[in-house]
Amino acid sequence: MDSSASPPVAAAAASLVIASRESRLALWQAEHVRALLRQRDEALQVRIESMTTRGDQILDRALSKVGGKGLFVKELEAAMLEGRADLAVHSLKDVPMQLPEGFELCAILEREDPRDAWVSARAGHFTELPRGAVVGTSSLRREMQIRALRPDLQVRALRGNLDTRLRKLDEGRFDGIVLAAAGLLRLGLGARIRCLIDTAQMLPAPGQAALGLEARSGSPRLRERLGALQHAPTALAALAERALARALGGSCSTPLGAHAQWQAGGALQLRAVLGLPDASQLLRAQVQAPVSDATQAEQLGQRAAQQLFEQGAQALLEQLQHA
Image: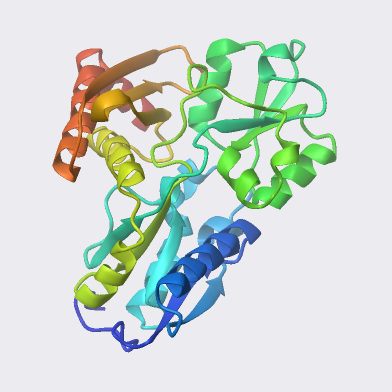
C-alpha cells in the first residue's frame, strides 16, 4: 500500500479517531489525549478505536526475540494507513527510533515521573532482598541494572499488561517486580509502589513516561492540532534520549538506559548506561549543554553516543547481536 496516498478518513474534518491498544493503561492514555483535544475544541468529536496488537498477544517469549516493541504499534499504524484512524497514542518508550515512511511524531506530551518503581510486599527495595530472591521484569535494561547492584538475585521474565504483571506478583511468583512508575500513577495505583528507584541506581528507558502522538505525514491541519499539545521541555529531553538510542541502533534487545534532565539556566544533562544483560560489561556516559531546539537536543544525544563508542560500545553492540 502507498503510504503517501490520502487516507479515507479526512483529517480536516471536525472528528478524529484515535487508535489504541486495548490494555487499561493504553485506553487511559487515549482517553487523556481525547480530553486534551476536547479542551481545545469542544466541538471536536473524538472516538477511540481499540485493538489488540501482536505485542499484546505474544506473552510466552521475550519481545527482543519476536520483533521488539514495534509489535505494539504496527497494528495501530495499519489502522491509520487503512483510514480507520487518524492518530495513535503511544508510550514513547515503545515507539521505534525510526518510524516507517509516511508517519511522523506530531507531539510529545508532558512527562509523568520517568523513574522505575519497585513493587513488593517482601522488601522495601530490591537491594534489601535475601540472596536468591526472584525479581520479575520484562526489560533487559532493568535486568542489567539490577544485576549490577545485586548479582546474587534471580531475574525472571515478566510479560503481560500492567494488571497481569501485578496479578503474577500477588500470586507469589516473584518476590518483587520492577515497573514504570508512570503506568501505576496514571491508573491510580501509586499505593502499590514500595519505592521509586533513584536514577543513580536505575536509568529509565529512552522516552519513558512520555506519550507520543503519531499520525500520517502530509496533513498540516492535523499536525497543527496535535502539535498544540506538545510539551516543549519533555519533547526536547525525549529527543535527546531518542537520538542517543538511534545512534546506537537501540531497540528492546539493547540494554540501554537514558535520562535527560533539565538543569538551572536551560542546560540539559543526559546520562546513559549501556551494557550486557548480565552486567558483566557496563559503559556510562554523561553530557550537558544548553538546549533550546530539536537540533541541539539531538546533538546532545549524539555526543553521549560518541562517549559510549569511545569506550567500546561498538564491540559490545556486536556481542549483543550475536547473543
